[in-house]
Image 1 (spheres, rainbow, N blue to C red):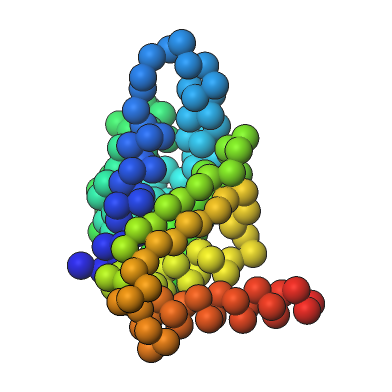
Image 2: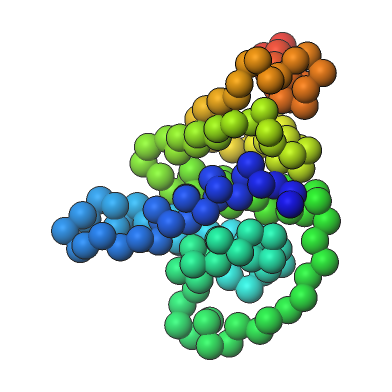
Length: 173
C-alpha cells in the first residue's frame, strides 16, 4: 500500500494528539487545543474542506484527530463527499497538516521514521516534499535505515541526495 512508511507516523501522531490522559496536564491539553484550532483554521484541510476529505480517505488513522477539530454543530452538518485524490493533492494536504501542527506547538515536532530501507516510492516522494518544503518549520525528522541494505541506487539514497542538493540551493539564494 502506498505511503506505508508514513502511515505509522501519522497514526502515532494522531493518537498522541487525541488521547486524553487527565485534566491535570494543562500544558498538554492546551497544546492539543492549539493544534486543533490550527487545523480548523486551515483553508485547505479545515473541517469539511477538500483537504480534510483527502486526508480522511488516504489516511483513515487521522479521522479521530480530524474529528477532534470539528465543532458539534459542524459534525451534525457534515456530509460524506467522495473526493478523487491525486498524489500531489495528498502530498500537499499532508504537508499542510504537518505545517498546522508545527505552527501550533510550543516546541519542535520530532518525527522518527524507522526502517526506511523498506519504504515504498510514494513514501519517498512524500518525504521529499516534507524534507524540502520551506513552509514546514518547527520540526525535525530523524530517519533510520540499515546501511547494509541501502546502496547509491536505492530510493532513500536518492532522496538524501535530493534533500542535500535542495538545501545547498536554498543556502546559495
